[in-house]
Image (cartoon, rainbow, N blue to C red; front, side, top):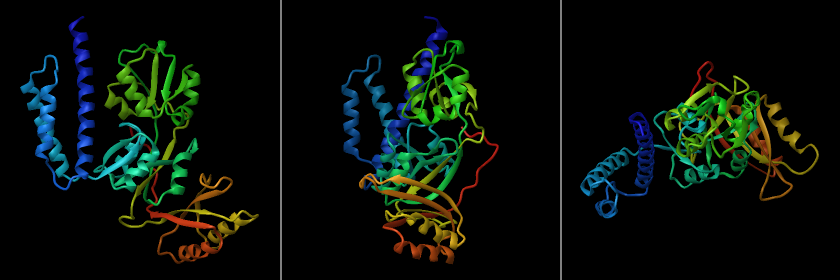
Length: 359
């Protein structure tokens, strides 16, 4: 093996080490939320015993102990900062993480496997905030998230309009003529359907865009690419073969920030959910209330109620502040027109940032 090849493998190993180290720090920060005081001498000694008693090939035991003591020092320092944590679905480099950065760069993004997990860790206090995609300008509503919004007691505290400009990512040194397929989340594949067809790339679904990038970097399969953000390429050591491969340049995903309670100023936009009686005109009666008060509806989405087959809930967004008298009159009429209803939150309306290609 040539020196250049060995150095390339060393660089790849370094990237994997850094990703694992970052993952360990995230776990340490989360553990710190569950402890009354930072630092646990008994636990630290247990860690040192564990790493000293295992064989690590060329690694000297004293070197390993020094390394892990430095790691635990950094873990304590992070725990002492009492960082604010934001949950998102997917792996680092996902568009949801970019939405968190757009909302508040001081938040520490923490990945979750499923959307339901995001709702759960915010509800139980493990995370301060959750960021979830609710609808895309091309592919429409994200059904699972809307279903969870119907069920949740969490509050919407902000919305984020995240421009989504997908990249085709490949392993370094890939010959593009050899590519046969592209892996990504089904929504991303649909948003890039024209590009995939023109380049004769078979679309293959993956649970997450950034998760596909991480898989490509770790498993290194041949003749495949992934569709993900530019940030994912940076994080996982991949090359950007082509930028802006989405079919529509104004491709944007609307994200909602969720918390256990309202925070900051309430804002001029409201989301609510309601169920109407199962009779002709019931939905129209509810919508007429908002029309009579001259309140502008920006979205209405119907979702089946999973606990009550045949029943539907409606998610409705409108422009209006909590202290607006027109809003007050409209909400006061809902109990007599609906089977049940709840306000998900009043929050500032997001404005779309044009021209910037984030990620």
